[in-house]
Length: 185
Length: 448
Image (cartoon, rainbow over all chains, first blue to last red; front, side, top):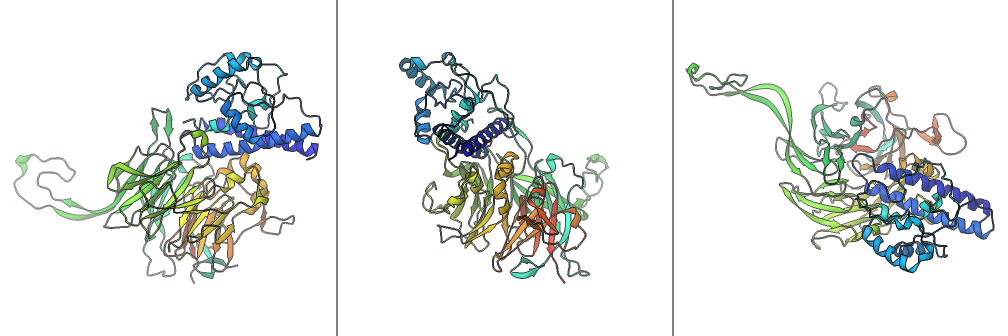
């Protein structure tokens, strides 16, 4: 795949991801509650977009093209997530903690985090310390940090420099646990 | 140009009536959400987003104009469902009527089932055209008379009065669905019916409201593993043990209730392999089935996905026997349709009385008919511009190539806010009811 095409696909995938997230976010507030079918379809699109985004970034990097200034893709540190994502991408990715991704099932996360912390201290980021248990019915969606401006469709979030504890948009989008979007009921 | 219908190739469709507000400002409560003829076609019911049901009745054919079938006039209007609040989940339950299903008539009264996202109700619609007069103890207005003034004894008699149509809820079937109900279907035994939500299908007896049997449950143990949901379900028209349900993955499963109490294992699964050339981001969304309908004969079933209508022979599971493209020109626009949410629209489809023609809606207030025998299709439009009485509908065409011919409309000019999701075909005659956003159009076959 040429660098330019990969770039286009990359941009397209990111745009679709952004649109999907804003739709998911908006659907929380609509009358009648979350629609399971719609949420499922949105998550399927997001998954496709994310996979394409990953593979197009792969080909970008391998072709040596100058890519937009962003951190390398990360995978979540929680083992369950790891297993799922590694099915999707076969190439190993550098692991940055996605502390943003507070899971919807706090119990699992707690267990995972505990074991991670003891084994993987180098990769700890300060935000990981705050393992505040969030209830399943928490208002803010887990994949969007609550204190940040809402992405309008087509908008890009400027990426934080490497080493910062706040994850950039690219990370939030790609480390999104799409499956976990569904059981919001 | 002739259009398909009724098995012959020369049916032309004429405007008959339009119901609903004229102004362009559509009140959300007036948005029509379901349309259904009863078993004789004499009654036509519509449900709207505001939870109301409006029933139209066909006037008997007049002897003066035998070539003109009777008009449909309002017979009864009632509030079926009200908005509710689920305190436990802090969720509002919409009053929108998702489906109406008529019961076959057994006595003077009519019965229908109507459902919103959570609750199904059985309504009795009865006529009152007589009232008793001449009570001994009551005045005509209902006040009780002073017993001392009663000096004679008489038998009250029934006298005619202006026709009053009353709707009363006879049964309320509640609290059986965690997810949103998308379908209800009456069984051919006329005693039971099913209700389907995203993950479960329940079987009810029409007389019993405090219990239902769960017959399909596709909820995974871990919701994170959810890959598909139930999108529609229907009973076979003749075999009371058979029903089908469609999924968001484009599959249809047929189940036999004699096999086991829980029909998680299907008896047949209908699935067409995906065309690898058509893969895109949105392949999965557009393969989701929005409606499934058995033919009247029970031999075939029809499914509607975003771009096409497929006819399946119940004896062949591997692929449909017929596929009709509804608006293939939208395939290259899926991304925009995703952004404006149109890709999530759930179109319904219907058969004509003798299963020779199928109909479904599209955008720009267009609707499409496919004649299975003559392999013809036609696109017609429901608009107030073509609403002179008995004016013949002109077939419409969407231009897909570069050159747009006269009278054709280009894909980019289509109004995606004007969608026809709900259509119904009279069970016996060539009369169709087509719902635009807030108007109901009735078209009839041109009779000479």
